[in-house]
Length: 91
Image: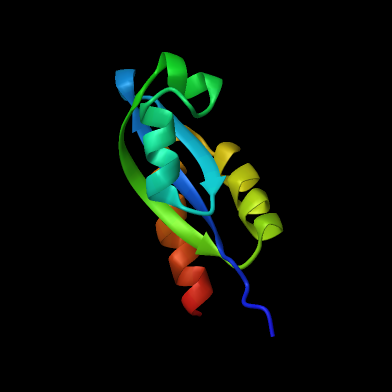
């Protein structure tokens, strides 16, 4: 039986205090791609400072749907999204 490779939804704090959300198989590797200008166009102009939060999902589709929900939230609710998701998954 093949093992399932999980995808991660992550939230970065970038220069200027702005947030960037994305999905990746390896958050640490993706963070450094963003740092070195190999990530999204957004993070090339606003380099990331740190990973604020990350959450594992069983499939790429699940991670993409969560990313859309996260991006639809106001900035003030984005960190809380990760806490709510954790509680929902434990229930």
